[in-house]
Length: 111
Length: 114
Image 1 (cartoon, rainbow over the protein chains, first blue to last red):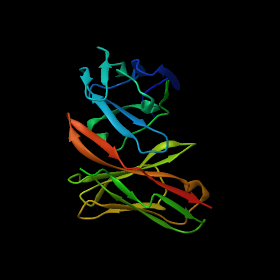
Image 2: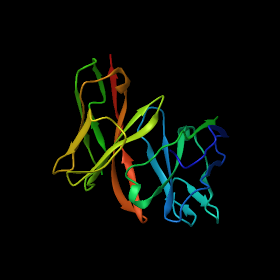
Image 3: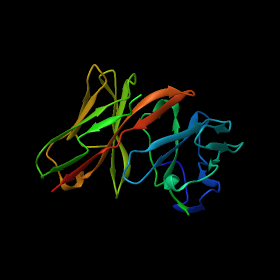
């Protein structure tokens, strides 16, 4: 069973920041938070991951709360191409090759 | 680097037949994982191969099997196909970064069982 809770859907205006929340209240100390997204009928795409600290890469930023019970994925300037299902996944490092996907959040970027 | 490739992209079979799907990982990646995606069950892990050995297996019947070759290419086989096996089959290869593995998925093979 997925260890995360995400809203089923969100809308965001093009050019604005998209902030996608994820609740993982039962996360263990050795579990990472991973974010993947899946554009319709394509294979999932890795976005970012983190353990304790906030992380940023060319695609997004990941903000993890101090108690690690929740996190937020931030797409700083959403475009129409960011419309996708976003999956927040919590796994131990040793299980990162057998991910447990939940239902994710359908993000729709509106023109 | 070329991404993960999967062949064929689309496949139509009938019940009772068997099917073999192929996956070529990103060059240098030695781990290949397979997933099944259906509208009802979502994305589910099938199995993972590393250096020609199956390391992990999901909760699927024995009709689902796989193998990996010395060049890291992988195949999965489904025997005695059932209607419920209609799905998008995804493979992913992994690389180690930031203390853990990240998976890179292929475009998938869309299997339709009639």
